[in-house]
Image (cartoon, rainbow, N blue to C red; front, top):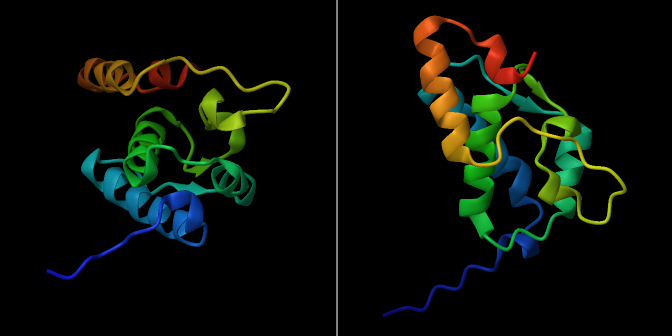
Length: 120
């Protein structure tokens, strides 16, 4: 057996934008949405976060963003409050869990009312 050590995501900052783009493309296609992209400032927020959940946490975050973000370009105000540790005011979001966001997407996609998902 050959040991294989993968450092935590917080030690591989250069991987965060690459992985985020990959997951954005993957989940945009999976949910039938137009491709999403991260703004430079949103990417900066991701780079400052310590990622205790590693790649799984990033993947779950990106899935949530694809579901709830109404615009193709993801900005810092679309990101969840936990990414803003130490910031005076974090933006508010309509869903507190990924399960809530998925449920809302499923319920609203059947009636064609996507704007209610975005809270607009």
